[in-house]
Image 1 (cartoon, protein in one colour):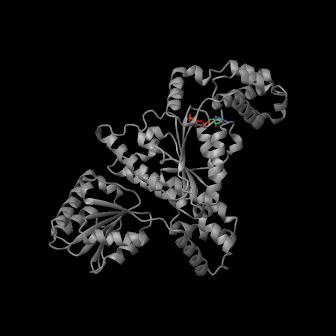
Image 2 (cartoon, protein in one colour):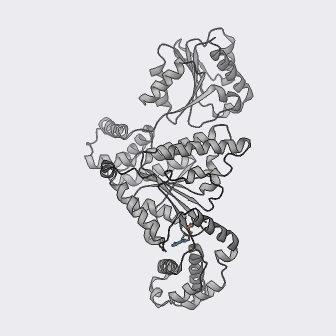
Image 3 (cartoon, rainbow, N blue to C red):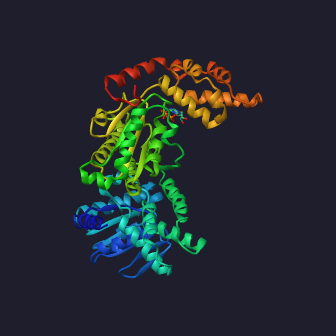
Length: 497
Ligand code: ATP
């Protein structure tokens, strides 16, 4: 916060015309602005109207256009002022408003008015015409110490018995990534439901947190169901994840020993062969939340919006850390880097933001990036040092298929498993992906149910295999090409043979 305050003061002193304060917390923004105004009058516009706090003028209902028109028509009405604008998101599409803001920004740039416009908004929108005049600043998430303070002062205000240290610390970690306002709301809800704050409230926090993350529109919190036991084969990758687990769970000791903070892993390769499954299992193994970054949703319509979204996602993941940040279909996000045109420009900048973060990352936001095709991916991303390791996942071998059959049969028909001839199934499924095998088991179980059979047999599954076109049958050429490319690049094989 202090860092942000000093940046704000620097920018205001240097005459930056429009500062875009990106935050959900207007109260916090107001406090911050008051603390940096240093004698300048604060003018406030929000959906309720216009308010001049210095001269005690209040114009309820005055529109943004009226306000800006008035301020630009009166001589010196903006000199030595801070003009704070809220609720502007829908107005920044209006060409008249954009033109009026540009006019004020030009006056500030020319030194005619000593003024700063501060737009406070939970969403970033940079109209093209204002891009050069605007600087985005984000209010940081609460630190662990600040969260602890919020809990303590809430309990004092509500006169509840002070929380035991252990509970307080668990709540503190659980609240990471939430704003003061959200934390207080959840605490108040817990108190009103049970008359006290207890361990049972961690579930409530989790649910609320899930909502807050969903609301951010970019990250999704995935419930943890799958563990490494649900992954058949891929022993090298599993072993590697276990090693990282040790570091992750003992980070203080590991760092003191000289071990680097784990950055993350890129898992690339065949579709349906367990890449996503491993991302989920990694979060389960590390016992931390799993956040999925949706690259499609990240790409915004306004200049700077995608990068800002990326920054927002990163900062939310860091605030929630320790966590696993799963970036699905990485190749889609960074295809077209270095190309021509606006779209390519945005991807290149987005990529830069991501790469710098990955390079410098010190937080326990462990990245699991998954990708089918790395052919179009920029080489910088694949260079050693970006990710801790890059794994290639191929089609499962005999031993792995055995295990995958076992997992999926036991999941559905545990008692029938011992009577099934797994070797017969394995022999007939060369070139099948994990997802193909799962599909075969699912279909055969449904068919057996439909035929009202008392148990699932080897024949039922063999029938389903016959009726299935395996992955390698459908896309043989591209799989061969992919497999060759991974071998050439000498990526580590996720399997142990
Ligand atoms: P895509 O690139 O198409 O997203 P993916 O490699 O991420 O594919 P997953 O989503 O991990 O594929 O796999 C799809 C489903 O197939 C999984 O939910 C799982 O049930 C099954 N599966 C795939 N590989 C394995 C495996 N090695 N062990 C057990 N199940 C597997």
